Amino acid sequence: MSYDTRWRWKSVSTFFASCPIERRTRVLLSCLIVALACLRFAHIHLLWADEDYHLAASIFILKGKIPYRDFWYDKPPLSAIFYLIIGGYPGWPLRILDAAYVLGVCALVWRLAQVWWGEAEAWTAALLLSFYTAFYLPSAIIPFAPDALMMAPHVAALYFAFRKRAFWAGVWTGVAFFVNTKAVFVLAVCAIWLFSQWLELAAGFALVVIAGFGCLALLGAWPGYLEQVWHWGLIYASTSPEPHPFATGLKRTVDWAGFHAAATAAAIYAWFRLSQKERWHLGVWLALSFAAVCTGLRFAPHYYLQFLPPLVMTASRGTVVALRRYRKPALAALIALLLAPFIRFGPRYVRLALDNMEHREPHWTDVILDLDSQRAARIVCALRQPGSTLFVWGYRPDLYVYTRMTAPGLFWDSQPLTGVPADRHLHATTVVYGGPAAQNRRLLIRSNPTFLVDGLGLLNPQLAPTVYPELRPWLAQYRLVARTNLSLIEQKQ
Image 1 (cartoon, rainbow, N blue to C red):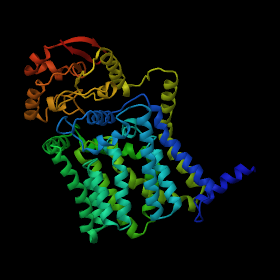
Image 2: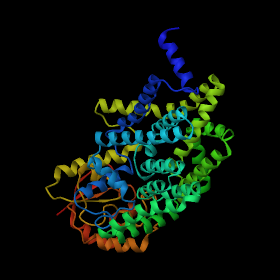
Image 3: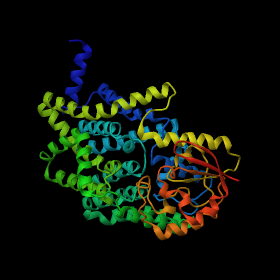
């Protein structure tokens, strides 16, 4: 047996033994985690919903606009502020930021597992998290929208809760709240874990929340924040587009568990070998995180990102215990269960990388809208003059990212104007925000964008802007100058 082969087997056995992990093994594991995080570079020429929405919002902010006051933004503010780090640019800056964020979350999970159990569990948790943020549905794991962006403050809050540092657990839960309102479930976990220290927890949470609300009030954004994030958000959450939400939820949960079978099986194995205290802590975290997934009865794939940290944390313990006890059979089972998502989602990275190297558009139905937006943006950029503005009918915020233009008024997509949310407006017309939408259309006609791109009418003619009588005189000021397969590009006469 060669030296390299002996070292590999020694590293594996050392990793899952109780003795300290060798330095070379740590380097190998670190490189693997980094490589998994960097796979998202294959998406360098693409934008996914909803990352384009938050990138566009950051561009608006950089041009002096205040969210909620100067432009409609129905998510908490930190999702837009996060992208200020890269100036709202797509491409390399975006994917480097994404990879760095994944590594940051892996480091937090590593630390929590390390203080909870040990170094072997820490590396296992970090590896599982990096693997599952690389090999699943791209629309769920590539864009860093609120569900993904909340993972870091989520894990940080639970780390401090585990260490009985209630004030800092509250602070990080408050940070998570300004990323995603589902942070209330994180707060609930911390409150149960720290029942005897709830005053300190509440103080930390209140400090951040009051400071954030105060900033919104000082900027004149408070009324808009209440309307856009909470009023619209609650209406959206209470009107699921799924005709049979419970059946859909069961199917999607089973599908998700299937692609995450290695972690699911390891977590189940761990459950029967945990102490009563560990089972209580992890049970609360798992249960409330899954309750967050069920909010709104949509069961969107990216919602499960809130459930992923407690799952990989539990699975890390189960994996280590199983491999120490059964070694080769457990390792074979682990590899077999990880192969399913690897085989299903891995080839896409290769195809995208080849497309990038050969400078060709990917032939992939999931990115048709984004590719169409890129074509429309090139046309607008060729026609624009300094100071030109843009309004997009539909939900195509990527157009603002590719053109780096802003809307002249409060509205920059059609959701608050039709009252039909973007998760259904390509095929449905059911209005959930009727009265305010009619009022918003009357406000829209006071704005005078240079370009109007209709990115919805060709896809769902029943929601075309010409359907609304009050908009027709306003639309008459624009003439069609170009079109793509899915968009009409009009310019003010």
